[in-house]
Length: 190
Image (tube, rainbow, N blue to C red; front, side, top):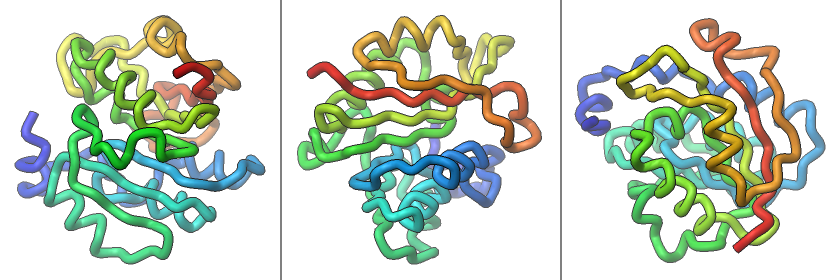
């Protein structure tokens, strides 16, 4: 998938023009300590800006230079955006983040690369850091993106993390209602 080409052509149906409703609800309803946060596959940066407004020092990372250009058009104190490859995480990102938040990045990654996703996640988080994800469960998709994701796969792949909570979000984008699962993990192993 050529993500930059999709951004250059304006072919971004996943961008709904606002942060993911489950993330916004999570930030409103939970008294969580802010800190440093990373959003892989940040696209135009809606989630990054929401985190910055909630008090985080938030960094968005995306492969697409055009996505980062779009993200930088809206200045929000505490938000920064970096062109980079999640699978080749910049060295200065290693063990630098208290939180990693993601929405539909995992499902966009071919299943053959998901172990690499986990490796980068463990590199980015500080020990004891947290990972909050809104997983798009798309069990009927054989080809993607989005690619198949199931709760069983998540249980298996995230075994190095302590699951603190899993829930079905009561809010979401209409096209994803009933097809997402939120999970909050703590990174408890190096």
